[in-house]
Length: 366
Image 1 (cartoon, one colour):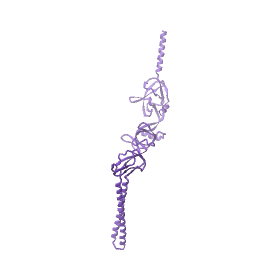
Image 2: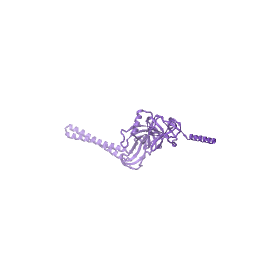
Image 3: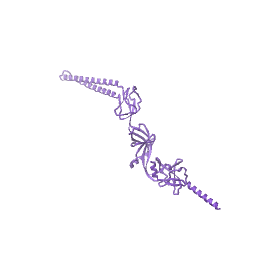
């Protein structure tokens, strides 16, 4: 009997030791409300501040191309030349016609002086004077017409040399030297990429968040960042310059425009990316994403009571940050939730809580 009791005691101790070993020690954090900045990412349409099509304004043969594709140009720099022989001939003809009109006006002026003198001596009638004055007036009109034609011919000649409208980058040149071009033919485009615009659409609710953030004047809350196509964060940050005056009826969103400086010429017209907009939220309750699991499209956490027993609890998130959820409802400040190791937990299980400060997790996420 003594041996039996001894073996039972040993077995009981072994069982107790085994139960103690099965109680996991898991990190637990206490939820607390704090001011934070929510970020939202929006698909952006990136455009150069100025992106202008360069088109021919007169027809002719493309005689020379002065710049290559992708080359930086200055305002007024020559880009293309169209054969100008025909336009020089037109200008010379127009100037000759102007000279002829001026000579005719001189003749008419002399004739008027002669007729006026004869009229004063009553040698000829006043009607002859009226005719001479009309001829001089017609001659002056011919001068104006000829001068206009000469100016137009000079303008047409100037269009044969195509210059850059501003400092920028020359894009693709679809035509080569010798091509016959018509009036309006696209020769290239020039982009001013020193600054770029990012256009993106914001929902009405998020627009109201943005307006409230600006009203609170929270430092850094209205910062605008740009995520490039490879996921990297572009620097420097941008600023929102304008917001449309109405919501789009089809989508319920409103258009924003942000400006980004481009000192390294990394951004190009037509690039893709996402704008990250920050909005301040007061007394936000944050839950680590590692503490959350989903069941049937609902979000749950394990809340730990004072006895170390975990209870599955549903909550509704308001937004998602990099490593946290912002709680909309279902949880409250002061509750303790399991941060990691929730894969093997079950409702009602007992754990040994290992406290972890939420602030340290926020610093690690940053």
